[in-house]
Image 1 (cartoon, rainbow, N blue to C red):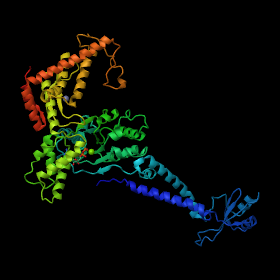
Image 2: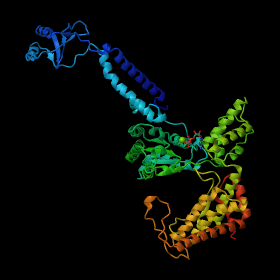
Image 3: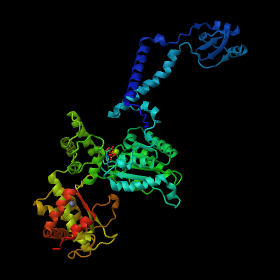
Image 4: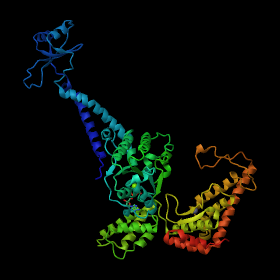
Length: 622
Ligand code: ADP
Ligand code: MG
Ligand code: ZN
């Protein structure tokens, strides 16, 4: 049912080559055989022409400065295609118009060069073709790898680039391990199924939902499942496809896509790789800029703003793994104002995904999927699907009837080797360090109440950078923080590193982001909030006047004396070191608990809820 009529590149390349060849042949032949192309109209004396006019034999005449071409009357009943055409050199004859008129000759008519139709047609058609051919050639060179999709592809710019499926068979059952995302998208399904329920009460149905997550976690699959659950048509297009096109075509396609979708409402439009068109215009840089992308982006924004509330439910889902690069305009209310995180699955999630794919192959009875799930932290859904397939391939290669645990073990090694290059998979040693590090954060956070309640500890790699994470929930909405709360936060940030020091007696690079944030906080306490007793309630920075240079950067210092600068450094260092010591004390005092929780988390990868609270309640203040 999918339609995708984009002619393959090789075909347009072939056409371009033929055009070039024909043009070249034509050029050469005009040089070698000019007589083929010269005008072979026979010339007669002027007196004969006048005689013929007077005898009423001339049908039409084209009178020029130095030549008169004329056509003799022929017997119309005869299907004689080649009328007789003659020419003559005119003599200055003021009577000629009268003569022609008197005989009813049409004159000053269109050029009559009819005899040599081949030459004339070619001379009209070939030069533009040569031009097109040359143009094609240069464009294909300037596009580098793109190949000649240029001039000839203009004709296909009206082609659909999206894939339209009347209904997809994918449902939420095909997606596993991303339960939170599923819960959030269930709401979207309801919007699509019964929009009236929401609009009647005056609620605005969201237009855009952004699925954010690393590659292979099932964003595309999820979008399809939403369409499948709601039983609505699914239009999908990939952002990178827009970018390959010529100026204007991308925008036209967006328009076309939305037009078609509105006709089929309620439906879903899915834009994959949104970052390819939605990159921040500011970060696009000045180097050449990408006009095409910007026009496409603007068209997308216009379309999203354009569809009226209530009359049709078109929900735009988009996927990206780089949300931070997106243009802010895309994230405004009324556009992609909802974000759903589709993250890598935890142990339980991986098991469920494995079960889905294992059901499709013939498994040996003693296979333990749980064990496979345990061995594959950091695998995304696509990696797991790939893993099952690899194992099945291995089994088939060995001419086995069923896939065995041994096949899986070998497949894991293969897939891991591939993934390690992308540095997504933790070794056992790294996993252990991450576990203690995160539990360190959690324990310090639990005993330093200013930091917020610890809600979840996970050693499943999250997003692009973090290896593990500890999630703290602020107990209430906070606008003001006291000095002691800030100190608690700093200690919590240092808890991860402190745990590494205590258990492994060494420090890894994993804590650098923690240290950065801890030091920033301490510096702000001294220079912005005036919380240092030594330095007093002075603001040593210059406030936020220069936010246009980018948020989050450090404020510039006021002009301060060398002594003050030194005193600030000493104070910042003192705050951080005190907090570090607190963290060390707490962890030393609860070393058994640190061990116990870390062992537990190494087994299950995620601890949260009451189980986590039971653990943390055992912690003792030094
Ligand atoms: P993304 O769009 O996030 O890069 P895809 O949706 O294209 O990932 O996933 C690629 C394939 O991997 C899917 O077609 C599916 O077979 C498998 N897959 C990925 N995530 C999951 C998941 N959570 N549950 C089941 N299968 C998944
Ligand atoms: Mg995808
Ligand atoms: Zn940390």
